[in-house]
Length: 122
Length: 107
Image 1 (cartoon, rainbow over the protein chains, first blue to last red):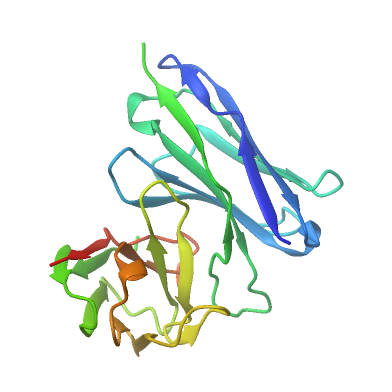
Image 2 (cartoon, chains in turn cyan, orange; image 1 turned 30 degrees about the vertical axis):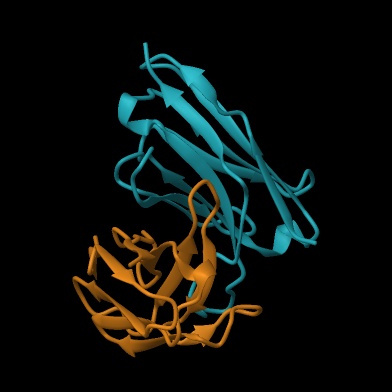
């Protein structure tokens, strides 16, 4: 069974940092691109970042570029999101999501974790 | 960046109704369009990918169509478990934007 479990969320002050983790199991993690998607309280979904299976390709939303860093450790079946210079508007539930597409087929997110809440407040 | 819009933003419907949600991209995205369902407090669930491909395990009452800039999600006969918020997402660009969502609630 595919499982994605996020951790690392919590309360942080503006300007602070936080590192989120996503532990993957039930599939060959090293074969899949992975993503972070967030959802502010009462708001819609916002794609944050993606990383290819071998970390060769990394992309960020404009809203987090230069502040957030996505990475992965295929030996540990884990995905990470290092968040620096946090702002109140970064407050959200952060989900990790798997992308099963390959070979140029359209990307889509077929499995999602349960999410971890990040609150940025003084 | 590619912007996504959805209409309506919300709708009220009854069990058994046929429901149609529209998604529009700010530029052509071919068939690189996905649909997700989200219930309160839960993670999103993939329904349709590549505009019209039904994700495994998703009931056949859900269908998707469209290409280019205009897309549609149709629920042929609304069931009680279908009351939720629906999001479209484009994957044509490496910046994979979502639409603002359409909330479907009970009339």
